[in-house]
Amino acid sequence: MAAPTSSTAEARGGRKRFTVGPDSRPALRPYVRIAHDPVRRRTVLLAPERVLSPDAIAIDVLGRCDGTITVGEIAVQLAAEYAAPADRILPDIVRLLQDLADKGIVSGDAASGLRRASRSTGAASAEERALPPGVPAPIGLLAELTHRCPLQCPYCSNPVELERPTGELDPATWARVFEKARALGVLQLHLSGGEPTARPDLEAILEAAVGAGLYTNLITSGVLMDRARLERLAAIGLDHVQLSIQDSDVANADRIGHYAGGHAKKQRLAADVVDLGLALTINAPVHRQNIDNVGGMIDLAMAYGAGRIEIANVQYYGWAVRNRAALMPSREAVRRSLAVVQTARRDLQGVLTIDYVAPDYYADRPKPCVGGWGRTMLVVTPTGKVLPCHAAASIPQLTFENVRDRPLADIWVDGAAFRAFRGTGWMKEPCRSCDRREIDWGGCRCQAMALAGAADATDPACRLSPDHAALVDLASTESAEPPPAFIYRRYQARPNQRA
Image (cartoon, rainbow, N blue to C red; front, side):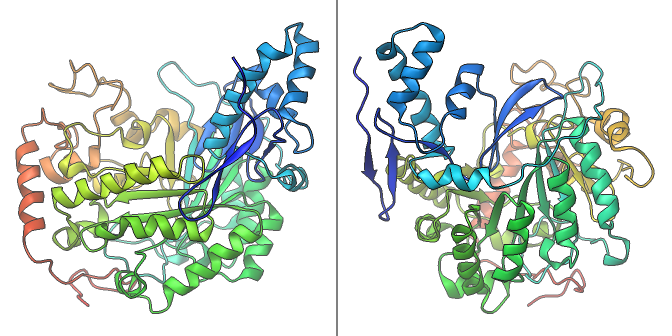
């Protein structure tokens, strides 16, 4: 089997797919890290919203990808070491690297390896916690640094009652949280809010995260940060910026966020992120008032130089519940947007990763809540409460412990809120006997609470739920009516304050 030659494939928007061949000189992208995962005793690749676990030979190949050596030369080196013919090894190496190139892990840019080598990866904590059977180690930590935010998005999923700045964790406390999280098994850290750049001490918080050995993702609206501050964060070791947009249409984007000039500020920040060699993801929440511009948002991500776009249909938690009728798209609009995404994925393979989060209200099967309740993710709120998911506070019977009062590992393993819906023992029928019970883990508990009135009910997104038909009727009815005015998310607003 002959290996393909090195070339580039033209994609929509002028950017090109890197096609791997024997003459290619691949390098890890500057924001990708090879790291040791001591809790799971494996070597991993850390990238934006990704944790990959290649085998030993793949790690060996990637360790040689510094932008100076060709794929053919790598094959010759491995052939000598493994006593195998180079012409038999070469096609396997090409397939491996092409797959990783299409996932945004490697590129043909020789400078990538040089930039990556100059950046600190931090040291992992040596303190590890042995977990009992049935309690997996978490992969991600969502650190809500503040609930303050300059935007007033009507789809905000933060709770109706926001936590005030006077009780926010200080950098020293966050540093302890990061060390404990890393020892527990966390690899990916998401610095979020609110708007995390509203914290004047963000640099100190980021420095602690990098020192703990975490892969750092900054989730931002982009309207409060200038290039000078971004340069400081990049110098500390920030890996990835996830920038939210409200639409590709400038006027509508500023209307949805209720922030004049916000779209232009986002555009400037995106250019700075790419120029500094950081990973850029565009986060595009979609709803009835922008869903027909999904194609334009994909084009915008291409123009910004993003490597990834997440097109997420709005989830109705927290403040967003108040605006559900103004945000609910029709089933036909969802179908149109999905067709646009599918076409773009084909046209932009290897150039732009497009993640699509489907709406629950038109689903037949539920999605696993953050990979399963208490299985892969934990959230720490601005004041230190530890939650299994960002909307868990909407379940009134749960009590959430605080990192100020109890070690993070103890909360993860033994906390009542985490044990409440971890695994399958809590499930009722039809979930208990469903063959998907360890795939979707029962779906969303917060949605069950909001729509079925009980957190242990079958997620109404599932067609087997007795509440499923009512969910579909609600979505169809609300999407068919003219949208009411937005109730904007003002930080000081009363719940019934309208624009």
